[in-house]
Length: 372
Ligand SMILES: Nc1ncnc2c1ncn2[C@@H]1O[C@H](COP(=O)(O)OP(=O)(O)OP(=O)(O)O)[C@@H](O)[C@H]1O
Ligand SMILES: [Mg+2]
Image (cartoon, rainbow, N blue to C red; front, side, top):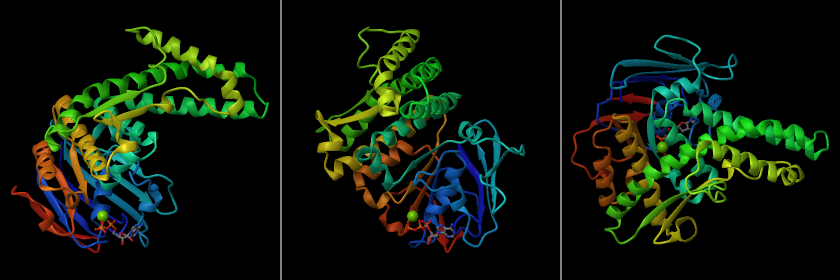
């Protein structure tokens, strides 16, 4: 998958961006606060995913702009597709999406269409942050590999939110426990789907991360990933079927109903899952050094890109914002080897931070204007 043409205006400080990137390596060079990250955010907008810095869509509008307009044409390996995202100040709450000229498309349709893997210094949160960061990572990565999976993840979240809203009412004695269990069957079905999706993804991700981390540390340290799920841990059967999981999940919800009513939210389920990371048997979150945490975050992203390539038989578009300066030569080499077949966008203040001899297309960003 690679971008053939991209344009943006009115998006944050981007004034005039219209360019045809290289199929492989693109360097976006510019001083601080010129719009480099904004450009990668504009590309990320095409994925239909939320902004990874937690920015709301309306904040994308340039301070003085009446609208923003970002357009992307890309090859998905089979054909060329066109995405257009616009937002009009004051008239719309959400951006309008058009795909191949067909208007009013949903963000989920974008998600199924255009896939990026984004590396940023904020990836450290995957390691040091709360478990929801790691759950979001597992969900996004796994959904990129399975068409339609994103609907199940969304539905599981909606059902859980509805159940929790009922539990809040129960807490105020306005609802009985029986009414809450009405959600349980549907919730259990979707939750088990998500659980199996995450579990399957980690099964493939774990050995890959172990191997990549082994390369970085010269085999001295062993990184192990494991998926933590509170249902898996309680299941005594060695090889349970999906139907059994659903049954057990419902049982778990029922067993904790009284307690849930007392606290006003669902305590057990996939919303408590985590991705556990250990180096030589010790938790990276708790005991890892800063350098180890950064390396593990890098390895997670590399493995995500690699796995996507392997499973989808095509490559994602890779966005590297502000990460190159942080990496030593060995890590940069591993990075290039892993993503060498992919279209890559790298932002930099200074091209000398790069230790590579690959041919690249250079772009300069100054005050929201990109020149080639
Ligand atoms: N909605 C907006 N409208 C106009 N300008 C904005 C908006 N949001 C952010 N900016 C400005 O965009 C500028 C460029 O931001 P960006 O993060 O892209 O810089 P950068 O080139 O990545 O810099 P750095 O090298 O420091 O990371 C900032 O000065 C910021 O104030
Ligand atoms: Mg930046």
